[in-house]
Image (cartoon, rainbow, N blue to C red; front, side, top):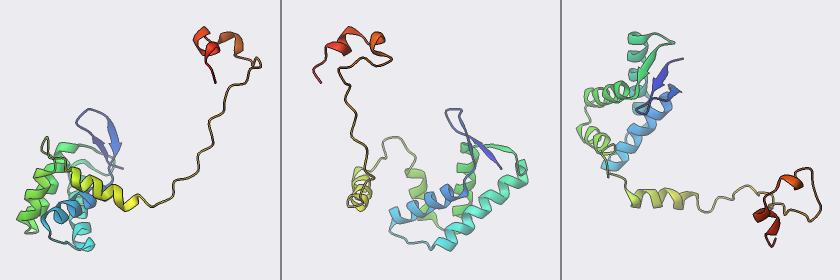
Length: 140
């Protein structure tokens, strides 16, 4: 599996679905709706090029992937999508409206129930002697 070195130096496995998602998001930003198959083909082009350059278990960078995605979008003939893709990564380009719309989509989804936090008992547990005075004096 290909490995991607991110801008900050951390490594991640290459996930073609992320490219497809980025392309679809850029197309939606333009109001142009690409079909999923086209975005899939673009993603496959990027993956194929990376494997040709670095091998199945090679290492690439996020910057190289970004350049390849730009090239593929251009070759497929979508200059508006390319522009939106470029704008999506510029500093300060975060779109609060889009973020709120995405949150609203999931607002009605039920969250899994979380267990109630357990309260410390007054009895001494195995760590009781190790607790700080501040912790022991808290009014639970």
